[in-house]
Image (cartoon, rainbow, N blue to C red; front, top):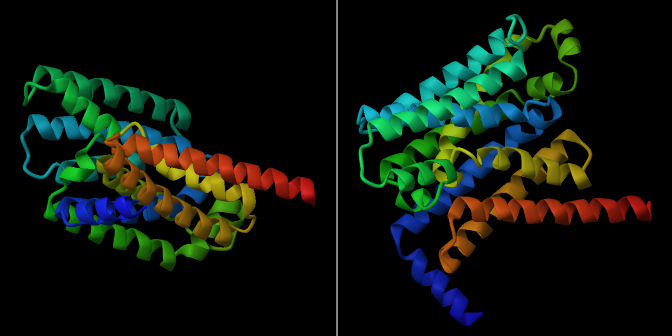
Length: 283
């Protein structure tokens, strides 16, 4: 144990480790806040679809050799999120089919562009890093950390300010609309926030594993807690702890950061599942 503490203290001396921890805590916190809403509204697949869109936009940004990829990836992902929610219920191609088309199409086009207009000799490494996170969280720049802090703060403030409206829309959208809540506007707000979270989380776990940060903490908390508030708080705590554990294990063991964090979320889910089962049997 003393050796482990000394090793962690040694790694903490490096700025990139501190940047990784800050970003991990902020991203996991934001993703868990809306995770409960997305799971209850059966919108979990939106996170997966938008992550593929973000990958396609990132490929375009790489081809254009933009110095800051986020300036293109973020607005494109938000625009697609709004487009899917606005037209998903009125067009001939309904929501789930539209998301599937956009998701697979963006993933294929992004990979195609990265191969045709390759900016480095290691295409497989670039794709693996983008899709699975790899070690990109450990190569963050100071500007990226500041951007993450600003966007995460905006997401957190919006969630706190509109908590009651989000709560109403989550459980009974029709009743909320009757009481005067602009459900379309708040659905678009939720979609925009999810898009921001997806873009932020790509550096942490990669495009293909983003949904795990949104879904697993919420499902874990639901095994034990029942009220919306308690589930949201528990999901946030679980998400942050799993991210911290995943980063520590990844640094010490040399494993991919994103996959290790998701593995920690999976372990947490099974632990809370067992706790929930034991409590129900005891009752």
